[in-house]
Amino acid sequence: MTPVLLLQVMALGLLTGLVYALVAAGLSLIFGLMDVVNFAHGQFLMLAMYAAFAVHAASGVGVALELPLVVLLLFVLGVATYRGLIARALGVATNRGMVQIFVTFGLGIFLTGAAQFVFGGDFRSIGDGMLANRSLILHGLHLPLAQVAAAVVCLLAFAALALISRTEFGRALAATREDREAVALIGIDRNRIFALGWGLGCAAVGVAGVMLVQFYYVSPNVGADFALIAYVTVALGGFGSLLGALVAGILIGEVEALTALLLEPSLKQVGMFAIYLAVLMLRPRGLFGRL
Amino acid sequence: MLRLEGVSAAYRGLPALRGISLEVPAGAIVAVVGANGAGKSTLLKAIAGLLPVSGRIALDETRLDRMAAWRVARHGVALVPEGRRLFPRLPVEDNLRLGAYARRGQPDRFAPLSLVFDLFPRLQERLAQRAETLSGGEQQMLAIGRALMTQPRLLMLDEPSQGLMPRLVDDILAAVVRIRAGGVTVLLVEQRLAEALSIADHAHVLQTGRVVMSGPAAAIAADSAVRRAYLGL
Ligand SMILES: Nc1ncnc2c1ncn2[C@@H]1O[C@H](COP(=O)(O)OP(=O)(O)OP(=O)(O)O)[C@@H](O)[C@H]1O
Ligand SMILES: [Mg+2]
Image (tube, rainbow over all chains, first blue to last red; front, side, top):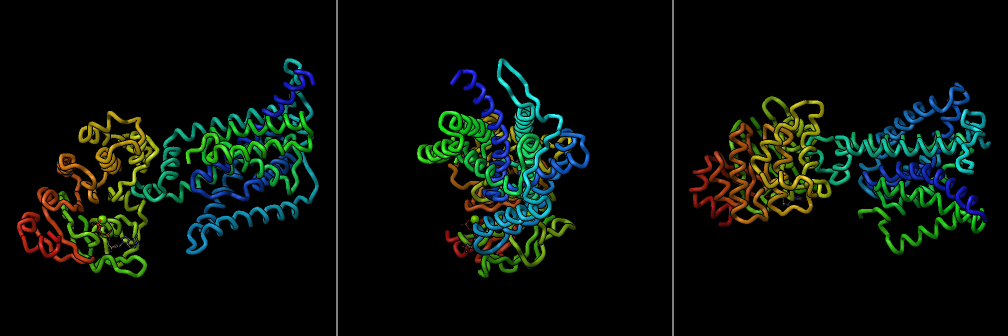
């Protein structure tokens, strides 16, 4: 193994990791805000990928159009999921925890089925987009342009989330996270904050999905793999921590890439889960968790 | 300004307020006193919209009963609740600024900050400190400060003296007097009878969810039968 190969693999791990990080950030944002795990998170990613694919097929304009449309769609979907399902699930009198789990779990199954129905089971990708099949060559490293673009856009989305958290709305989000009852005393409607939180978390997944489908194949089941990685990333980074999601996403990307290189490609998830178990045993609240 | 007519409320079928009628005139300090479990906190929660109630609660012409708590707050009713309910991991500054959240877009929304710092200079020295690391007295100041940031017309305080040493209690009550002087009407629930009645204009004595006596604060303070019968003193 040459140093260049090692660097090449690590660069790709970083690029992939940044996408993982953003998917995890969306999940973490919602969990941190209201202690609800969105078990349909992977399916939202899948939906974003298909939506970008559909916009591409219909318009051919490219990622510049796909990104705003799909992100808006996912934002609306997130708000609607909160208003239509989660808010009701929070209001039930008995077995609230179970209801919360199954409502998003069921939504995920429904979305997978719906995608199967609409798009069929074939793997699809935007193979002819303007980012496809081009590479950036940097000091002897070959970096696929679509992956570089994905990493950059995901990083920008992180920056946007960080900026939002410094706005007045971000402060209201933090306050609602702290005490969802007390915010009413200062005139904050927590349902509105929760709905916008879901919108933001899903919009983050929308960004990741659009960028991902530029180089990765989408199928009705694609969400499951990414969701699993996202859950591990959130646990590793610490529930509710934006910085944690970023660091953990990159870490998972690297570990996955390096296990594939050093051990065996089919084992690439083993290293990731080994780290996850180590974190659970040594630091259960995750790297940046505040629990 | 605030008028309650036949207000009742219950926790899982157990009545906690039984047909309360009372009035809080604009510009007054009205005290509500009574033994533990009399329903004082429940009364404030009912006004704040945190509990379903029957009966009628009106702020001037606006019906507050059946209004969501966050809307009641936007109508100018601020509650400093039992236990303060600050945002513990947020800094003092954010806790204060959040009080003005509902007035986003209004240029003067942070104007009450100067009053808050004037009343409680200690808060200004601790802006970057997390609320949870404040002392009990400072937390009470912050809770009142946060409520003032909403620019309330009616400020409701639930046992602001709880857990504070006597000197701080005097400071807090002195602040309440100054707040009223600034045009805010105050509804005060207190265990410390003498202190509360000394700053109040009117008082209502609560016993097991009913108003059993109302009158000028001085008269209630002077009535030793009241003190024995209803306050267990
Ligand atoms: N969340 C609740 N669930 C059930 N019962 C409650 C609840 N809160 C209060 N109660 C009951 O309602 C009655 C009135 O309680 P409340 O807290 O209003 O009394 P209080 O006058 O504020 O007492 P204290 O001086 O001890 O604060 C009590 O009998 C209490 O047990
Ligand atoms: Mg009480």
